Figure (cartoon, each protein chain N blue to C red):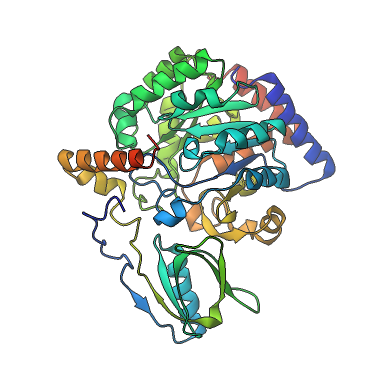
Length: 129
Length: 338
């Protein structure tokens, strides 16, 4: 990531957190947190399988609640029933953390210039500039 | 007149057809997001904050065309991310134009001049250039110096080649009305077909929550910007929506008016909120609890006056009655009338 060098999780970010829900209500709550999280999570399932990826959807209602993940390094979507989830770890970088307008304005001009140049260099390296 | 007559006729015919058929909820503009990757990193933008492997994903042309056909809206807006990064964007646009959709390709214009030759001028294709104000304000908003000048140069090049070009501007609570009015003058001098303006978005997941306009401040800001409107200014949007922004009229949100389709599916309930995703447009219409969204119904919607929710309400007002049509004619011909 382009901002890995200066990024540290803000207070309140779930980055680094690991949750082992004990009840269906707790599980639904943690899945909602993971759905709102702007980074990858790692799911440990009842089967012992782990899935690392981005949770982009969830359906907590119905007889078989499920979540949907874009697994990291794979194409396609994995659908995981809530009932199979044992732990959810917020293992990926919180890409929203530290990116607020206030944080940008509060930075020194030199920091802003450096970040701006870094973002431009990253886009250029991808052929997007 | 900012919007071509053929486009106005198409939209009017579409809306009236829906009304004759008794369709209660119909889409007006498909918000098609074929990618989230951008070549800018604007502070507070909630659309680009995903892990790299998500940012590297793209909708295929076939997925884009299927979404347009599935929802049936006469207009397609393509935001992002930066759409011009998508290697198949010219093909996506060609397919949408072939389907006679009025396409608004939203871009920061950094790549526009270089990519212009990949597109063909058409009444169905408009480059909608992201411009958040004059040079100082725009470069600050996009967190990179020099972008305003690049965009202006690209606009000139696009106009020279015969493309339809509009601007889209998001205004935040620190906007200076006098500077915004000067910006309008500048864009009209540049020769764009029309301008689109909207208050700042309030993404549920966006980190920039404090900077979004509160409802009364929004009305006050837009009243100061749009009062004593110059006759030279042309807006590519409903005149009733502009009056709504100025506090001259009240509307309830029409969240299904601008449905959003992206890598995750059909976004519930609207372009701004991400409550979940439906696999089909019909599922979006059927399963979303629409009554839970809009002014006074949901705290997340409390301060929202954004075009994607309320411009469709203004259009519905126009075609809902003869008096609504009359209000639209009056607001078009006499924008400064009380």
